[in-house]
Length: 352
Image 1 (cartoon, rainbow, N blue to C red):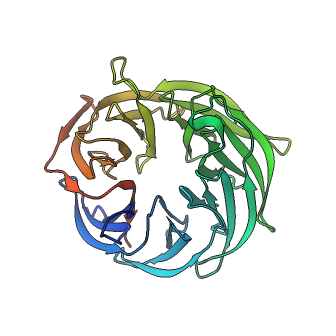
Image 2: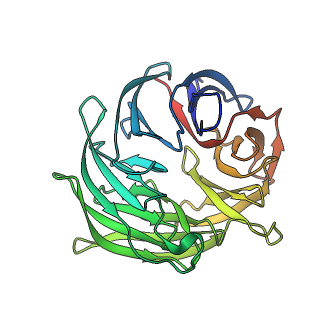
């Protein structure tokens, strides 16, 4: 049976390096759980990439705002164009489920930017800009807004924006004609917990939020009642073992391709954690939490077969690869690390 061919896109920082290629493209060897360099794309400081829901386009953060690429049949990327976000460099981006709008999160300036997407996949005019305001709980890093993640609810009605400076997720109603946002709700996290990334379950009824500074994932039920969003906390689960390195920071949040598992990672502890997602309830149970043989696993993901895992080790400039045994809860390194400067995130993309 043909498993289907995949490529992987890895976004990287380019600052201070001779290498101007911020996006690396790899062929995926599913059998052996390895990646092989295929090509690279010239772009500055790609801090995050996303693929449109129709799977036709890839969008990346760059110093100049955002860049849009057409995904070719062989997985290569063809530049469509770039657009300004009228602010400091973003750290995260995503599209709505109709691929009509592109949302950009601004860590440095606490800003959400909304851009209209054109028919050809290019990013067009800015339709809204929202600055988060206020003072967080402590006067170190959390003294000002840092929008770190923006994600639509799967019913395509609300944009959720994780603000790890202010320890909450703001929920905005999207006007689909105008592309404007209006605050509808706020999901408050514990003080100094730093909500970092969000993911919705495939059916849209559950929201997962990973908290960087307190190292846990919150699971919320989501529904709409009388045209208003409602979120109810169902579970809090740690990203660490009971014994772990102090000063750890949770980072990644990724589903497996089949949504049976969720992956997170811990900087400081330099570990990756895999959870099984309960089919009925969507709640998480820990399968394993083990070291990744690298420094600061900024992102980590299961291969589409769930038998292999890759960790992007931002501070050691490596990707490390493992065979995964879900039954025994084991990770076994399956070959040498691959050098890649300051990797930020990885996306597997199925060809054809």
